[in-house]
Length: 140
Image (cartoon, rainbow, N blue to C red; front, side, top):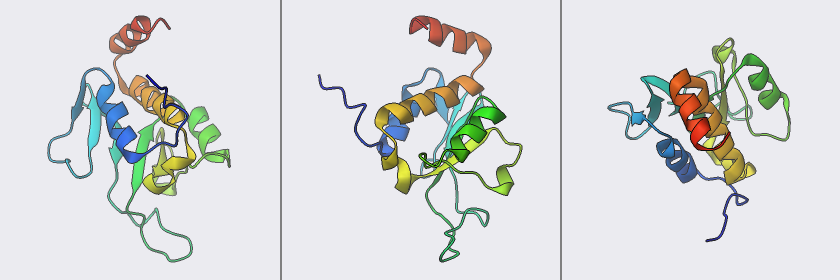
């Protein structure tokens, strides 16, 4: 089998990676803009267009924003301040431990980088027992 972790990430990868984590549910009624949860807590979701995330040139609302939880404010700052990543935030998310990324920019990440971010998002929201079990089962 060929390792495809180095190829550009896609929206399909977000869905696949989120659903591959243990104990994941999709919040009912969000089939078109899924909200992936673990233990009733969202860790990845596809956001509806909002006035705080707009194209700076046209002023049009982004329709492809994905929210991913992060472990800490420090991790969030590292991701959004690094110009080599497509992650960003808005004032609406000040104090919220999550980063935003546009689906149209996912290809700037490799599938492996996206997998790590989705796994980290899950770990930040899963119970300590579930997180410890998952890490142990992976040998980490």
